Length: 166
Image 1 (cartoon, rainbow, N blue to C red):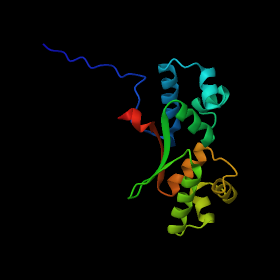
Image 2 (cartoon, one colour):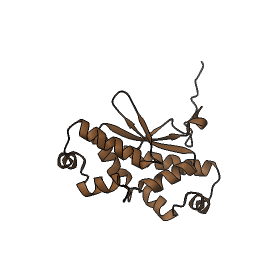
Image 3 (tube, rainbow, N blue to C red):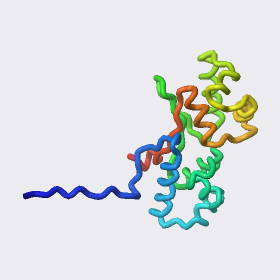
């Protein structure tokens, strides 16, 4: 009798992409990648410019990261963070350049003839936050940007950089 033995899943295996509406899975992937590289916490702090306390609060779900900080940690560990339209043609915006993504969200809002008041109702994002993000005077949290993006048929994902995935 032949018994098939299935390999146990590798806890450090990297997925092709992570939907950041469930950012805890992405945080676990970043944590696993740091460990896989043998990178100490202080090294990640130094290279990314983001404190360990912030990373711990994100990983445990105590708070959402500011987008610039999350992108900095992801970039340090060779991941990219993009916003992608869910409708054809699917267009991606690199979130290292938040201004282009915010312009795309505002264009999607105006094309759909959604007022900022109605956008607030569906996304929970205030008018002042929306415009301060658009002007780049404030940085959104991942949670709030995700709600805004989803309300306009976009998604935010993290994935290994393309040159690594090939």
